[in-house]
Image (cartoon, rainbow, N blue to C red; front, top):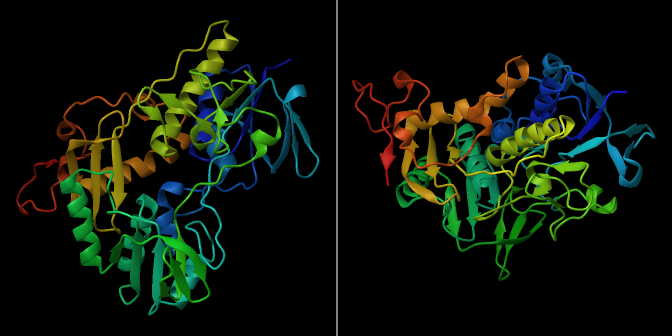
Length: 400
């Protein structure tokens, strides 16, 4: 009987785990379960939110090159003691190894949209001369505010931020981003935290109410309760507690990856991003492969490299980082950053469609301090700084 590997969730991490496992273990039966059969490009959600056509990417088509079976359905419960998953339509799927890749989501708030709401793009079109208040100035809020302001120049876009937007960046990259938002007409209000959304207004902590036609909620993280309800050990936020090899500390046949896992490194717990999630998926594929070959899995090691931020379709900024995600001296801006961000956003889909091995650049994120000016821009011809002269063909990486 074939070894059964079941993967729950078809985000970036679930897809990467499926490909890695199927390509390394031809004799195993790898199955991926997801409620929809269309892949959601979360790295481009700010583009989809303003109605840009990103195309339709069917999950079965993306899994076909690796020979992964796809089951469309929603997991209703995990019965870990008998190693089974029951779907909401009653179907029962058994497993020998389970990969838990059910990512996080922004909490739903009454009277507010979230970035993945299908109705948001229509609401923007209907209120093109109105006011949009973006509640939260993390990277999702910044990218959304910039995209909306560029697409709907008559709309008043207000970005609410507890502190300075881009506080995780170095001072020069942060200043560049702030100036880009200013050029786009985004009104940044610092020291302002949304407490709740009312019909026609956003109420701040302290009681002040800001009139608005629409509110976009981009703050907070909600994790699925499926693992906790199954008796799998989780942390206080609902993420699966894992060991150094990303195995559940309570159920070693269960691996958790991406947003779903509480992954500790020397510098702390990694936060849920595609940048950190894809390496956890690749490592899990390698770990299960080692187990099937009678070997012990190795500890997971990860260091951050960058913080890429789109500022509409015509601008971007990339802050390069130290392994612990603190800003390094280097950043990219303008055309160089646009090319870099596009390369980052497009690389997962390109890999899923190919039959090649997992590129080491997508998985071996050690976060070294090598000077990124020598490698960051995909092509010299498309990576001149926004401040370079038109005749210059040298890729420019700015230094903070």
